[in-house]
Length: 113
Length: 112
Image (cartoon, rainbow over all chains, first blue to last red; front, side, top):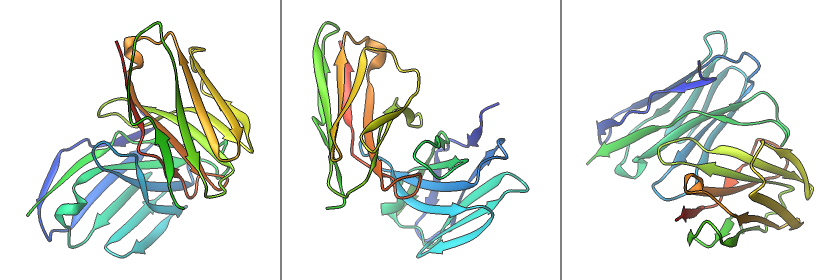
């Protein structure tokens, strides 16, 4: 079993829709949770960073963490064609640079105009 | 400056060649990382430098040799690579820890 599971998609939704992206994990030691966006031929870009359980909102993006279920989500409201990218969840047990970040395999998202 | 700059963007090398990848950041970040990413796969950690000292080597073959000459620069020296080493090589930096990672755009390496 992989430490982090993420549906690879592709996921295609019409412009303006609410998008829900999810990951599950098996390691209960994970405490720091991240979402990255990666455009084709570019490096990943950090979108959201959360600690422990709860919600965090930033503009059109909301990240949710449910540690009891080992489940994290990213919601994108009012989706735009520019949101078309691969979204990677990521998590780590610690904060220091020695704490290894484990990435999900990524979900390819396409927003149809 | 909020960028991590990687050069070259593309590299084709033979299995007997020696080449180097370069990564530069001027954000004052004290942790720098090399990752390898194969197509449609997540990034895989290779090396971590913290305060210019190698702190993590993820059992990477010796044909990959990292170097951190100063706090702004990170190199990855390549020698006698195999075709299966073809991938996108990403450099990242962070202030010190998992928060605030900034990735470069990567070097797309092809070994022939």
